[in-house]
Length: 88
Image (cartoon, rainbow, N blue to C red; front, side, top):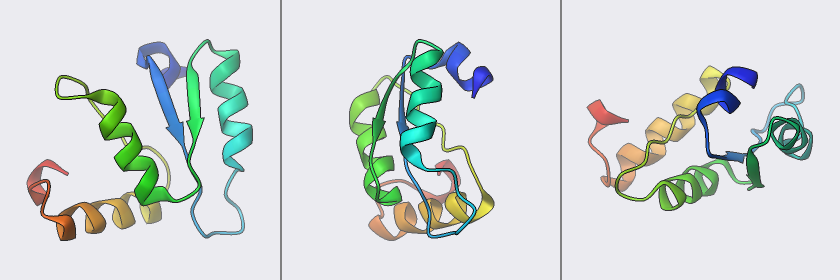
């Protein structure tokens, strides 16, 4: 989180349906201690959309976490056909 916080202006934290995942509220607290405002969005697909909306047309969204999360997000974005698969 320290590395992400060193370049992020804002963060959106979420959770996946896995028993070992860190609660998003805890992740938000860690970002806050690093000086980064973090929004908690419990649905991971909605979290990515929130991040895209927050970033605007000139911003960047980076999805970090498990391969399970990355795969779920990539699949959802490709299905929406909002973003080409090679850019997701």
